[in-house]
Image 1 (cartoon, rainbow, N blue to C red):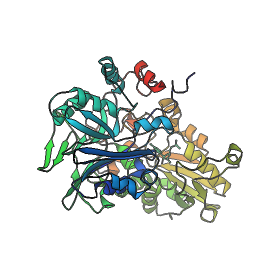
Image 2 (cartoon, helix red, strand yellow):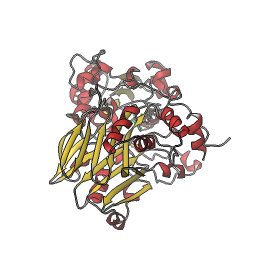
Image 3 (tube, rainbow, N blue to C red):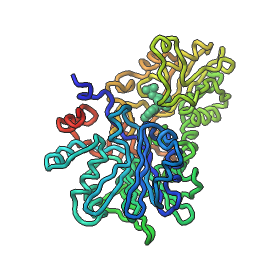
Image 4 (tube, helix red, strand yellow):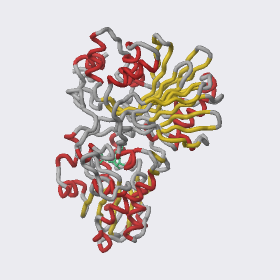
Length: 486
Ligand code: AMP
């Protein structure tokens, strides 16, 4: 059977976007911004700029520093306006066609697009578009948006509004044409997008840490359902949707965003520490149960600090992380791998020998990380391990842009907490409650079931945007399957 017929890992958008308007060093600033947003996607990166009736682009597989590894590349990306993208997707040659920003010449001129998020009606739209003659060059859902823009009528904004009314899902988009930089956030603001200013230049990017690296100031978050158009006349804002309400992705706070970012008015680090405090409050008996608190670095760091402060037990670095294991690391042969090579984490026995440990991580998905780490800590002499998780059990897949496996691979959708504890091999296991997370985010009454303040389907099963594609999360439709096999 053709190995591409049923790709094991579906392409998922889990990305970062960065755009600059009106700066002589637009491409270099964009490369720096993408570097700060590298945690949002490490598989590929690209930048498109505009200068005197021409668009210039450079895209490639790998991290920002690998793709833009020569100053000559950046100096070829001329112009004062640019957009860039970091992508998390499949590895290998087939991914090259999906590297963003995508670019097309349409009736209104050239347009480049970069997307963070995931559409839930890609296959449905793609089928219609292919039947009416569209030719797709990639398997990315972003190209669907480009086709909708191209086949609509009017100016670029009219066409964009038409496209936005046709798509559903999660999206923070940047578009670049000859005279403007455009930013869009979906009607629930599921993925983040912020507006910044650097002297006379404007920046649009996924997270505020992208502004910090270039010395730009955070102006505000792009509002749910808002289109921001930046051109030589200044900034214009349009909201083409009848109903919008801010319901950002909870996982951005729990795991995905950088802790030094501020999203929709909340600093991610502060939120994670508060989640840790709440986790400890929900498990008050831990005071008598444990000696020290150890995070799984880096994902558990901030919540472990909050937990340790609340429970008044010392925070120790019992696991040391190696930061130099990138995608490009040459995989050892299976013989060497079987020796138990600890590529990413190594225990620090002096901190944990004979100790009763509260082990903190942000989440359990398949349970792979926790199982490996627990075995490692036990071999290093830990006396007891009590695992505390700074999110509720992940029971439902995400179709809005975060890479989670299908339900059958999610530990918490199949097993009870006790069963998970025994699978992972810990002495006890607790997850924070969903209401506890909402408390930590500043809602003392917890989650409002009639009007939830966040997108939290992975915990609650409540998907705010309709999952239109019948085969969502499963195999691609017949038509996209054909494309996938080329
Ligand atoms: P697992 O090992 O499958 O249980 O996944 C949980 C671990 O992966 C935790 O240590 C998280 O910090 C990390 N994690 C959570 N969500 C994601 C994601 N979307 N992509 C990559 N890693 C993640």
